[in-house]
Length: 230
Ligand SMILES: [Zn+2]
Ligand SMILES: [Zn+2]
Image (cartoon, rainbow, N blue to C red; front, top):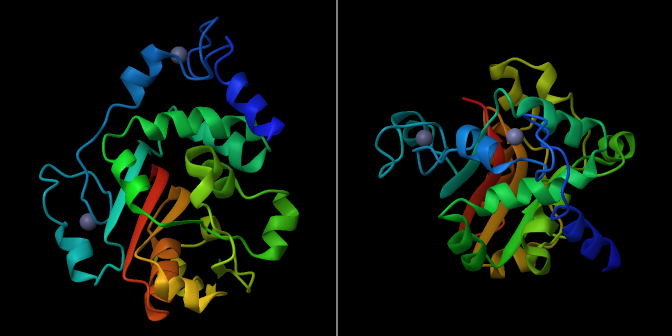
């Protein structure tokens, strides 16, 4: 509780903008957010940029896409790659709150969080969790909506090759059957499960998790990601 209060407080204290180094500023100053985090029209199902966001794009329509909706806040591109990598790989866990604040600026987010009855941070395998020391998606989920976060529904029992080391095609094979439902009853009773991930590249992991949840009876599965590769 105290940790959460301190994390919340720390993101309101003046500090240096990580992008333009303005001081004093928030971790991401208003000018950088206005310039680099402008809302973008995206496909409602897979969150790829798109001119007409009212219908799923041909790609995810054809692929039998298992996510009802995907919301992405940032482009996984300059200048966001560096802070996101610091957050994920260098234990800059204090970035969870500023990133969550950016995610909250999305107009559709409030409704999505209110509508979901379970929020599942994408699980890591035990080996990956031990190596990294924490799950970045869990920190983001807690910063966004602590009361709905549920880590006891879905697990990743197998450790597979890191997605980042694989080609686009290999990524889809690598995560097939990687996830396992822990509490099938709770999944079947849920109305709307929201998966939360830090970075979405091909969507292979999120789709594999969504398919596993749907096979266990989940009615609606959506995804929320901090950044999307385009
Ligand atoms: Zn700035
Ligand atoms: Zn799409």
